[in-house]
Image (cartoon, rainbow, N blue to C red; front, top):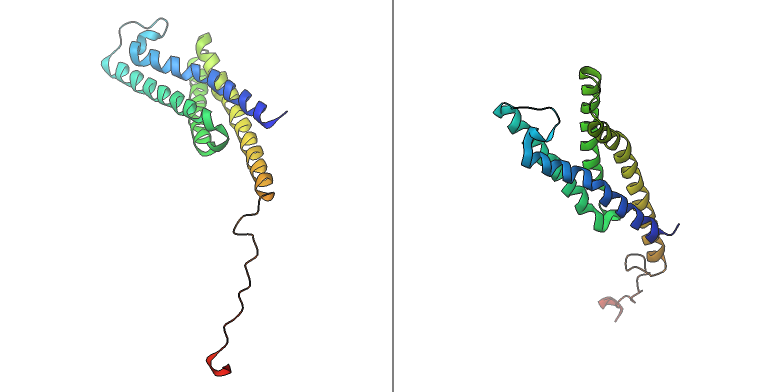
Length: 162
């Protein structure tokens, strides 16, 4: 598959995947705990914490989306965001083990956090490697100043030799 085609596919997959943190984060900021099924009145501390974490989720989605235009060059940011998501997924897995199986939305989120996100991080790394390889090939065909031979300048005759 051509680099440009694979890059576009990755960009599309990331854009699609970004819909999850963007929509869930935005909903959590606006609705607070009321966005969850079966949650009645909540104490202010829980509401505050839920909205804060939703803001982080929204920010993570924005960060991933910001990587899309130059995905091949955004490896460090993409990996950092991916690590944050995986750590969150591991915390969600602890909840699953301790509190029981959550609803379908949370199971889907867990699959995104521990499945889709690591796969996207690996795919991004592949695209970055291909991009770097193509840069090396294109740079090898054009002489660079640091690799060109230096011109030999004849030495000036010494004052004693005149």
